[in-house]
Length: 467
Image (cartoon, rainbow, N blue to C red; front, side, top):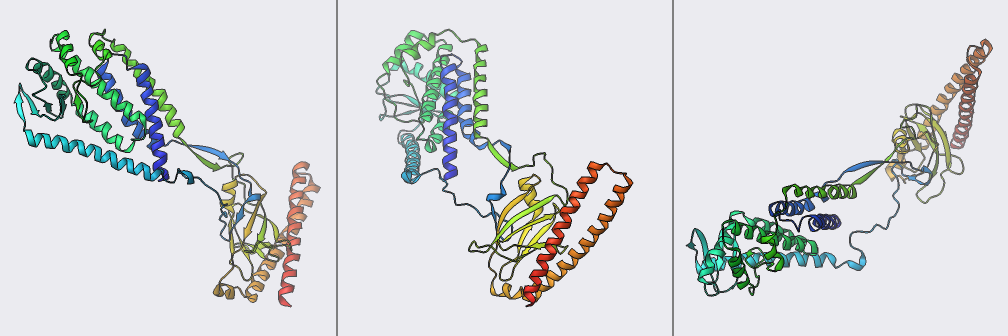
């Protein structure tokens, strides 16, 4: 219902703006065929434009300091008090809308029933090449599809030729199709006043076209005016039909004698283009993308993870093993449940703790989401393991994983010792710029300090498990 509501609002906005183009630039002109084309096209566009969604990208950075991650690195959603199309105060609006739809559907069905009954009851006869249905229910002559409905008692004999000439134009140009389109649209957009403005303008334009067609056939304009005025007291009953006296006023009579508008003025149709562009922009949807400041992904080894590990109750988890998958490198959470770890941008980090499910952190996805070089700060909430999962994470398994980690850390420390010797040799030779060398030495010190600190934490964890 929310999507339907948004669509109806957008369709209504489109319809109102497109109708304003007609009202301001076209309605006073005698370009009746152009006006007919515009009115129908504008109606259809008002239905189509809300379905055309142009998407554009919006770069946005994220602050992981306020995000909380579950065991599988999924953001814990914040409770949002989203508003639907209908608020609590307007809970009955959907009911009212659909009641209107049903009523207007039966309205148009009832009109078809009336026409069908008239045809069946009175039959169809030929008059001057026109199929005519005589009826005594309606005073006013009108046409629908290829039939003319006429009351023989209220129609003068000398007016029949003018009336039939008028209705022939409606039939020949299939004006009933325009009315059927607008009537069907009114079922779903009955609440929008502009659908009724469109219907009124379409019917009015049909009469201008029919009047123009009668005059073009050589009928006397003064006499034709008299025929129209004689029908003035008639009343429109069936909305889907063309009625002879529709919009019969001084303006309609003047339009027959008005100077023909130059075809060049059809260029006024182009005023619809900026309106269409405005609607497309208004209906466009942003796609928020987490992008890097320089649109680059950090190289392997650049990513620094800083996280707070919590249990399901929100308490810090002390001594959880944080391991880089496939390397058995990592660290241990502090008594405050925190850890800091430097990893490659495409690696997987696993957090293990007895009694909880393993928490998996996909560093590549994390980097793609935030997009800069960090530090990446976030929270990880561990999920309690079931009995089977808890039993699988035995003390022996933890000791085994930590021993493997300690072994890998020791090898890493040995590699760093070798790097230290190489750096000293390079410094002695002077083959590398001193500034570059200082940066490499700084990186080495940070890595060596991290490895030493992690070894101490792993040894303390192993000692506690072995007691």
